[in-house]
Length: 238
Image (tube, rainbow, N blue to C red; front, side, top):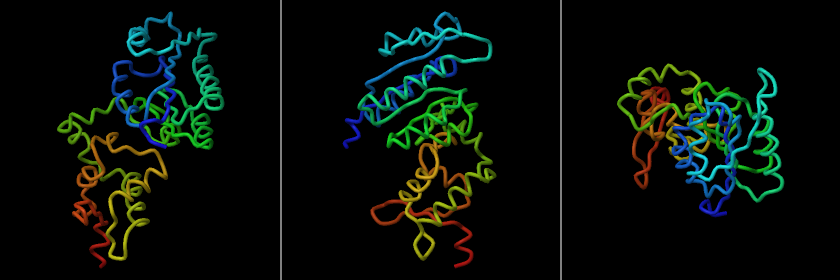
């Protein structure tokens, strides 16, 4: 199917997502297709989600009212999941998008993936990791990749991120040729097939910039000016 024609359902947990980043969400989602369903859930009597209320008409978002039935219980989450399941089985939808920072929609995400849907997630860094990792792609909204000079300083110790380094090494090893060099495209695809991954969450616009910053891998141009990458440990043993 042509990506430009893919239909997207967008579900917003207004109680737990920053309204001032919604344009960033729409910009990212537009890469996958057209949003045909837009719903936002919350107690619209609460002043805390006034920022979202101001966006409803501008972006044609359907507000779903959910009162706080009891302290500590979020009725909005339940309503969102019920509607998402209904949409998944009754509507012609290719991509499901969830905007939330706080609640764990992991079971919903895994079910959607099992049904062949692409699942996009957006939220702040406090979002539970199971939800983040379950999505096809998850983008942190409190990470501004445009301010590269600031993010570079924040990520100067990025090679100490053992989980990230191991993820890259495993992907390179899985896609490398006999000489140890792997094409960057297949490396990125291998990572995406394993877990939700976006270089912008680390402060870099693309995979090549991230790999350069880590400084544990060699990077060079290959056929067609594409990038090739190799673990420096492989160089030392070859």
